[in-house]
Length: 127
Image (cartoon, rainbow, N blue to C red):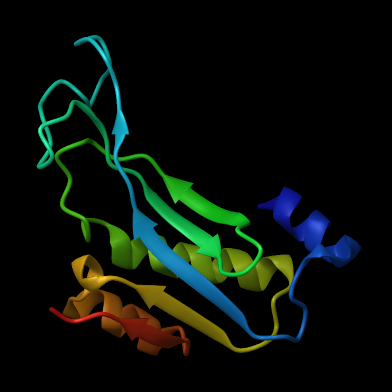
């Protein structure tokens, strides 16, 4: 968290400008059975992890990430992750309007409620 704040204080951050946070998950494949949390196959038939990512749109800066077991549902833990991400970027110095973008895997009541409570705009695809 401090590294992001230092970089943004040096001029790399959005300051008062709007910031769009892309919320996403990905699959990181592992090989072998020795990795904790990656022993079973995920929905894509791979062994691995299913991390959550928060990325600054435009710059591609990774704002936050969280490693999860490979069999985790896309939205599992995402509301808490989102609250932490918003807190982190505010601490780092983002004072402008925040917008969260996410795909349909993140469309649920907990994430919408987290966005509203944090007073961030949001665009979540609905199936």
